[in-house]
Image (cartoon, rainbow, N blue to C red; front, side):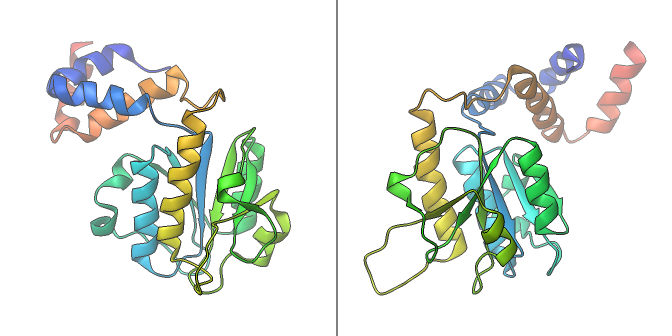
Amino acid sequence: MVDMELLNYLENFISEERKQRFISILESRTNFITVAIEDVYQMHNTSAVIRSCESFGVQKAHLIEGRFGKRLDKKIAMGAQQWVDLHRYSSSSEAISTLRNQGYKIVATSPHAEGSLLNDFQMDSPIAVFFGTEKEGLSKEVMDKADMFLKIPMVGFTESLNISVSAAIILQDLTTKLRNSNLPWRLPEEEILEKRLDWTKNSIKSIEEILIRFNLQK
């Protein structure tokens, strides 16, 4: 349970405009769609995908970093990593197992697999959309374990797009469909309050001193 006394206390240290901005943005956040990025080599690509998640209201992103380690460039992410919850894994099997246990269907994106075109794709339950490394795409393990396949329709000579471009196109389309649907896509109230508390803490420079002061007053 969120400590409402603490939340109300800390919100006195941010502007009313910022507080209302947090509330407004959280009304459009979703966990119904989440993103998983598998072993992307170029740091700027991972960062750009996180930025797209934030822009289109996807609250959680899952980074599989078994081959190349941590690949997040804060300059490219433009602060998006402060507002999106990042979960890290050392293997694809770990990520798939975790997401399945959370009730997600695994959706593999690939221009080559037989699957649904983006404009025809429909959701009836939470989905985890997997994006693969730049040249090789998704691993055989993800392709073998996927519940569904998704690709962007293209009519030119180019067979594939950069991962960050693909993610932006797919997330814009899917989140628009989701918000126009009757699916239960919004964050639960308790999680909204948790994020308000987290974001408020992140917005206060002297947060440690203020927390000490709050605890002394109790």
